[in-house]
Image (cartoon, rainbow, N blue to C red; front, side, top):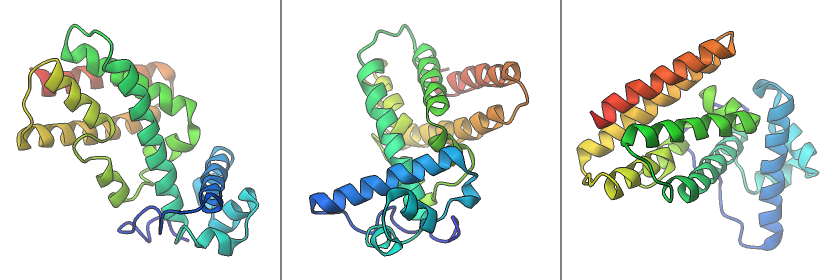
Length: 207
């Protein structure tokens, strides 16, 4: 099924309430991640995901309405995992300035993308639905939540609609430029673009 066909749907049809259901969902997500590491996205479909998970297609559809829902669930889990990891590290560390914090956050995100090729395929290829992306753009969610927490706690910045907008614009710009960096033919070019991105976002958020 098309990855663009259900951009307005929730990532998972219904939350499993029994251990068996939770195990099924976990098996589906792991299978999807494994396939994304081995195959082009267009070759990953619900039939292959079910087979990889050792399930019937019918069992898969009990919890996920289509391929896009599975992709979204994989992506959201990665985004939440990244935020949880970074919250423990970044918000307990000492940073001399906002740009220093931002630079470390971007470095950590690049490291995470490099370590998780399944998420890299989804995040850089525009294969996450608008609804799933919006869920991570809410106050407190995703990298924007980490930036907001740092700016409030360390810099004394107050929450406001202007801050929300600036953070959303920074995240959108960052995602597009990271994808552009990964499209470069050499590692040196990629690093140049990422370093320039740090400077650009630091000026926008902290000057």
